[in-house]
Length: 438
Image 1 (cartoon, rainbow, N blue to C red):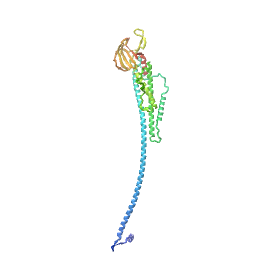
Image 2: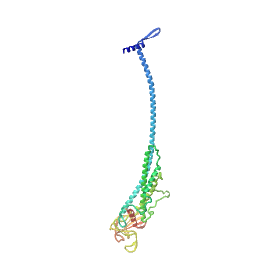
Image 3: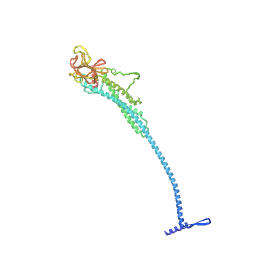
Image 4: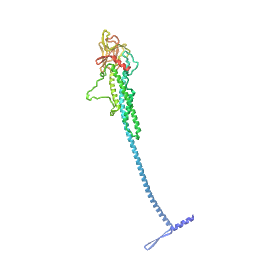
C-alpha cells in the first residue's frame, strides 16, 4: 500500500512541479511561484469546470432529444386519441341515427295502432250499447211470454235460425282476414340492413306490430260478423210484423242535396291509407253498425210485448168475429186477454201517454204514442194509473184490468195502430217472442 502511495506521489510531483511565472513590466521583472498544491487545486477547479461544461452540454443535448421524443409521443397519442374520438363520435352518430329511425318507426307504428284501436273501441262501445238495450228489451219481452201467457223454456237469446247455413265457414273467413293482415304488413315493412345493430330490435317490433294488426283485423271481422247477424235478426223481427223496413225507418233529413254527405265515422289517421284492408273492413263495419243503430231505434219503439205479464187467457182475436152482444159478424181491431180482476196492465213499449179517459164502447182507456207512427190502446180498464203527457217504459203499469164499457167480463182490449190504421197485435207479440225467446 505504501509502495502504491509513493508511486502516486512521484507521478504527482512530476506533473505538478513547483513552477514560477515571470512577468516583466516597466523594466521590472516579477514572478509568481506556484506550488504543487496550488497547481493541484487549480487543476481540480479547471477539471471540475470542464466536467460541468461537458455535463451541461450533454444534458442539454439529451434534454432536447427527450423533449423532441416526448413531443413526438404526445403528437402520436393526440393523433390516436383524435382517431378514437372520431370513431366514438361516428359510432354515437350511428346509434343516434338508429335511435331516430327506431323512434320514428315506433311512433308511426304506435300512431297506426292507436288510431285503429280507437276506431275499434268506438265501434265496440256503440255495439255494446245497442246490445245492452236489446238485451234489456229481450228480458222484458221474456216476462210477457206468448199471447196466451205461456212462458218460454229456452231463456233469452237473440237468435233466429230461418236462413240457410253460411256459404263460407267462419274459420275460412278468419284465415282470409289473417292472411290479408300479414300480407299488408309485409308490404309496408321497411328495408332493414342485415348488419344494422338495430335490425333485431326493428324486426321484433315489426313482428309485434304485425301480430297486433292481425288481432285488430280479426276483432274487426268478428265485430262486422256479429253486427251483420244482429242486423239480420232485427230485420226478421220487422218482417214478421208485416211492416216494411223502408216505411219504418225515418226519412233522411237533407236540407241541401248538393252538400249532402255521410258515412260511418272512421279515425282520421286511417284515411292516410284508404286502400288498407283495415280501412275497407272498418268502413264496411261502420256502415253496418250505423244501419244496425237505425234499425234498433225502430225496434225499441215498436210494441212487441203483451199488455199483461201475469197469467192470462187469450179470448178474442184480431179481425172479423161474432159480436158477443148481437151475435152478428163484426170487425174486432184488437186482442182480448182475460185475467184476474185488477191485474196490472203494462205498456208494451216505451212512449208517451197521449190519452186517458173514456171512449164509447171502450170504457176506461189509455193510449200511448211510441213514435214512428205507432200508438197502442188499452181498454176496459178498472182503473187508470197514468196521466196524459207522462213518459212510460216497457212493462210500466198504466192501469188495472177491469170490465168497463162494452164488456162481458174482466179483460183488457189491446190495439196497435200504425199511422192511423189498426194492425194485428198478435203478429207483433209473436215477433217479439219468436226472435227474443226462441
